[in-house]
Amino acid sequence: MNFFVIGLPRSRTAWMANFLTQGQHCFHEGLDGCISINEYKEKLGNDNGDASTGLMLFDMNSEFPDAPKLIIESDAEKAIEYGYKTYGIYDPQYIYSLQERMDLIDGLRIPFDEIDDRLEEIWDHLIGTPFDKQRADLLKKLKIEVKDPFGFDLGAMEKLCSTINLT
Image (cartoon, rainbow, N blue to C red):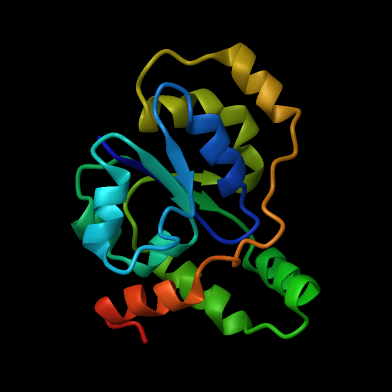
């Protein structure tokens, strides 16, 4: 079964993709390069996951009704600040609109600063196989982040958004 991690930029989705790839694969920004929801579903297969901000662009409740979802609740202001630091010019309304869409997704909600303390709960919710505490403790020591979280193929993303009426 597919599983998903949804969060604003800088909410540890890249770290979660690494953490959740053990015995199965969890993409980070799996939408990258896909031009339709069907292409995305084909890319995922039946048992992979994705940790992504872009997942908020879809009606995750209807597209993947039975898939377990983790929603990382984080501070929109931090995501906006990161956008300004990284790109200079940034539209805060984009982050607020993502947050509004994220609020509509059903799933386990974990505040950003509780992630490390609730890893076993997250694992059980999304994966369901035995939890490897030793591996989790090792990964907690690593700083895993994407330098340019918006460095995906913009042409493909525009095509994908047009198929779901977002452009």
